[in-house]
Length: 421
Image (cartoon, rainbow, N blue to C red; front, side):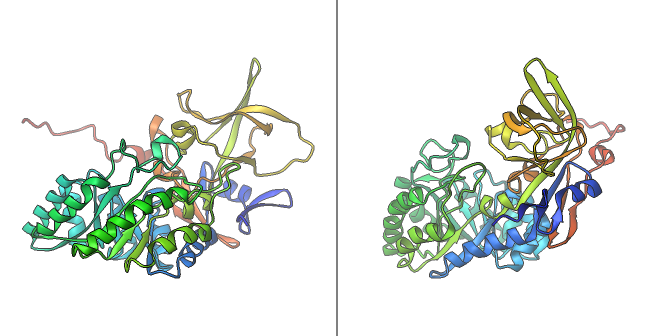
């Protein structure tokens, strides 16, 4: 059951009315449920109880430090893709021993920082990266633990921007090249090839693409082990889908029922990297109606949130359910566009959506906004980014304050020293 539910004609997050939070903290406002984050993590973690495993939360989905500390306390590791994400882990959790560092473009600075902080392993995406990590580790007189990301060439049947396991994608090595890459890794002086990784995409609704990928990966794992590659981990990535509209995603139990039989006899620890599954339906974006504008046959509901606050509808044409936070029985519905104030025609949250037409000053909730919401936000149009609050039962904490106009300019200067190259 969702923690965001109507009670007495009002939308609640756990035991707090969304309208009350919006009035006190202002809008736009990201509202998260502590219970939902923990319940989602625990359900997935429990589903894989029959095999050694580690759930590495995907930091890019929602990188708030309080959320990271909360999930670490529940037993989570972390999947990161930048030095900045690692910095968040070090500051919030205190150590990086359960961090897996992915991404195709790791810089020397990021690799050195990760080695200094003792991460669990790098997910290596190319031979060139493997050589760079080895060179830096050798210079630092440390050993680097790595998993090589293998591209199994499986179509996850998702949006092309979030499909990552096909041959035409930029990620990983072709499965045909993987064995040679491991042989080379074994010859490098500062590399320990302890894992193998895949990640086929995001918002995947059925377990079949994972089954197809594992049918290719498991024979490779067995061959590598037979050749004395000292594998400890099989990382199958993330990508578990959620409900945005009317999808029927697999449950963690259904996911595990397909994965566990294929991996349980490998003798490896399984790593899973969920982000959206844990965070997506754990948060909403509350916004206030500023104007209702009628232009010809169109009705525009202009709100104070914009594409810079929640990018997904503009970037992916993604659907987010939109609710009035106060239900008004008997109000007529109409086809409306929900749009923001940014100077782009692409600044919209819904087009031709059948909704009860709200009045100026009322609040709307953009649902399923806990993942890839604030973490993809920007200051475009010199707009300040929203506050974030975390609700627990009938109380809440501000876990990120709202930015101010002063925050927008604090890194800039009108009086710069001139340099010559």
